[in-house]
Amino acid sequence: MPVCNVSFRHYPGHNRNWNLLLESGRVRVLFNRESYVFNSGDLVLLEPGPSREFRVQETLKIHWIHFNLDAHLQYRPEWPSRGRNVYLIHPETAALDEFLRLFSEINNLCTFRQKGWYRLGYCMIQEILLRGNMLNEKGLDREHIDFAARILRDFTSDMSILQV
Image (cartoon, rainbow, N blue to C red; front, top):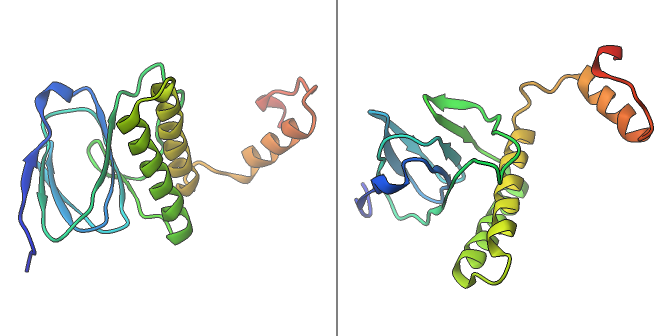
């Protein structure tokens, strides 16, 4: 039985924004006319799109970042798809602690807004996305890992991916 059933909408002025959510409870999200349920420890990424409706299904503390994936971020997420424009990873405890630390630090940057806060915040968002990419083993094959290791050992190399 839900402890609370709070509903709030993602306001339409930010439809171009991505949402990055770290759950510590249970929430239902209506997005692209589909319903998704996310649980404690889920790290969720929602692409820009229509308004979203969030329904809290139990006591929850949600860590939420909305941002533009534009020139500030160099790498697109390569996370497992949970549905159309919805991505989800469920990190183990050690990785989850690191994600929580990053979310907390981004929150502090946005709260105090000291000089340079914006760029540093985007660097931390990029770190979250890249760490999520690392947890998604899809696309990681031994051949490309070995190639990258050889290039890193010899910075003067002019070897190309075709010579692997």
